Length: 260
Image (cartoon, rainbow, N blue to C red; front, side, top):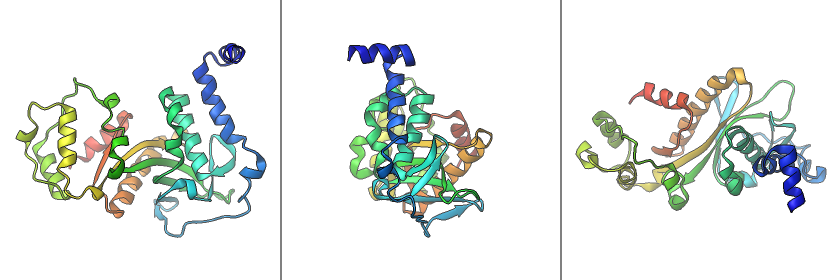
């Protein structure tokens, strides 16, 4: 182990970078007998919705049981859907943003309900993944990152817009909300109050780990399509309230511009 550590530091600079590259390597270089098990089968989902003429989006109830293959910019050959999503998560969140904490929780991205946005191109029989996001129901709220202490800050100033609270009450099965309910409360208390005001918890969910990949020149456009597709897919599935964690400033500005 000492020898491996010394080599990892020499080649990659640190163990965390080495672990990241190793996890990507394992996904891309699986035994060919496993990797190409269904490679001669092209399975299209006829129930997917189309956005902007050529982009498809859908909610997959459990990606671990989905047998379709997809292309991604991080692998030369197509991979199973669950492997593609894990690979994109590693490449974007861990390798690019250095969120090494996610190395211990990669299995979360390999199963469960996910939103996916993908595109068919002329040269490939397999579609290319553009975006994905993990959807978590209220039945496992104890696992939600939204309510995790890591994503809380006592210095945050809540934006308690009266019109926004009224709009939220009208749009959902939620107890009436008043600004006075939240005065002098911490962000944690406010968020929990909002959650427990929802009368029908099946109409709420958490959407996290939103990834955007593909051509860099189209990054903002793909981000827009992903957010639009995600909102429509969740609405069509009966979700009225979505709890999320936003890291990209462009996304914050996007929702702020939408206002109500």
